[in-house]
Length: 171
Image 1 (cartoon, rainbow, N blue to C red):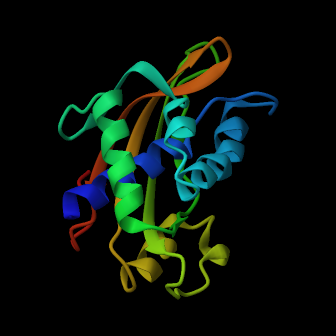
Image 2: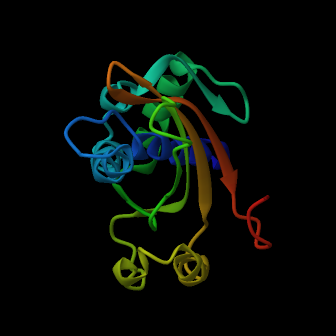
């Protein structure tokens, strides 16, 4: 059951970053599409989420490919029912405009829709305070996504999921 939760969390995480069209910068594209990726996860759209990945997408730990991830997502969505995803502003690393690769790190949590939590909207721009507040109410995770740009779209090539241990995340 914990393993399934980890994979549903991972699904949400790679949904956090997706293809980019329209915004003036890559960082703006990533931030704008964060909401869309979360929406797809909350709606249990396995097909929509997989459209955000490359054909060689891999989930770590475990080296899970797209097909394995798809099966796990379907089972996890059935098991956990309605949920919401909460997160602060992601840390985005775009080496340069010429490089068509990026990485994103973001802590987040998944909670059942009916669970009450403190108001976190005011802490969106301050991930450290967000983590402190949320850590008292739920289990936390962090995902690191490796992205590549193909034909003007950002796609997730790999995702690495990590649970919060109480001592923090590994760094």
